[in-house]
Image (cartoon, rainbow, N blue to C red):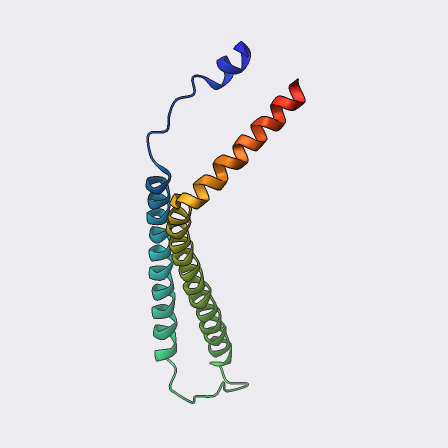
Amino acid sequence: EDVLLSLAGEIEDEDSTLAERQEARAERFTGYSGKRASESAQALDEVERLAAMIPPGQPILVGHHSERRARRDAQRIENGMKRAVMLFERAEYWEERARSALLHAKYKERPDVRWRRIKKIEADLRKAEKTIA
């Protein structure tokens, strides 16, 4: 036991409640979401800038000196759109995680949930005492 205490140190009460920790977690996730949303907007702006240089309906002129650049621009536009969509979906994911963190904290604060958790801990304690005896 002394070895464990020397390794772990003193165990003290938590400084924050579950709700406070989940709220901080939700804020962190909201920050992630905002960052991904702004990156998605930047990627979309880049795609729109590239697409604005090509006249609407302009085909790739096969054999023309502009063919390589036109194909490269088309590939960049496609990749940029994929990136913008991926970042937007990731922003939605983090927003949902933030919402879920807050809902989970509210769920854990319900009296019936706490009561069941206490009952389970008491049952585990009785089982451990029975095993030791």
